[in-house]
Length: 334
Image (cartoon, rainbow, N blue to C red; front, top):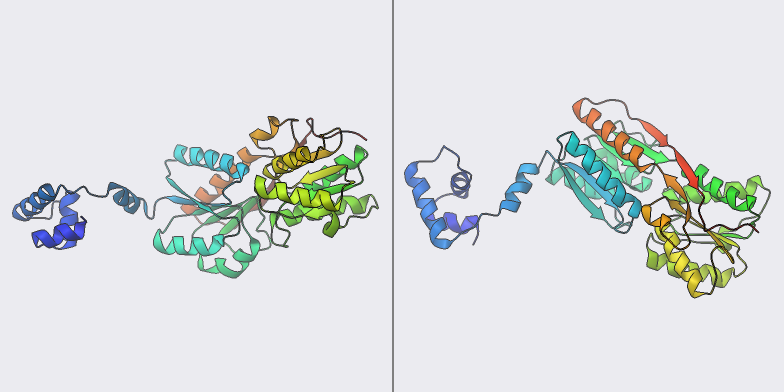
């Protein structure tokens, strides 16, 4: 039973039935009684969820999250929602596959839901280059830099991924490691993980050492299962590795399991470093050395920029937030 069925049974328009159900005053008493009689007779229950969604249209800030297994984004979403609530703002969260076109989804969202602004958690710059020009609401991209994009309504906040990855490899080299592998991520030039690959290559170049990504690297999706399989492939190809850099903590957990299944102890036989600094990295066995991204500042500054631009459009801002390499138990010295 739908509102259309109620309208047909009582001989009214759908709009009239809607006004009766929503207690609008511009309906005659006779019509109101006729509609309510049919509603009671049919035991009709209005779809309050649909009503709520309609009320939210045009008022809820959209949060688009790339990847369903990204622990960093889970923490970011929680912080962002809390900050928006403090400002009296609603938010609608949309989770997309990590290979989905987030910009195409945002275009459709703007057409159907009309959000006042959008926060992108993760993003492929190729999608922004090809499709963002039809989006006109204020937007902020978190964890990837949009500084090279020409859009006046898109700001971005990111970690300097290349510098952070370079610091990871330099740290491993300072511990005596030279045979270092890299696992995880999509290595196309518009992706975050590509910048981490560049940082890895830069560290090797600065030490005058060779690094062959075709042999020493293995890309994979940001999931424990796929990074587990990627690590096994890398170990089969490079059994002499003494250290592995995983492009995320989720990836590192998959690698850690693969190493255990191959009988390789961490850090006694091989060292491991992650990236992100999510809470679970501190409770792995061993505790994971990792790059800690400042999710608090990402969330605060992202919400601040978005709300400022919703109130009054301003020139785009592109900033890096601090990171730090947290040394724990998963790296040993040769």
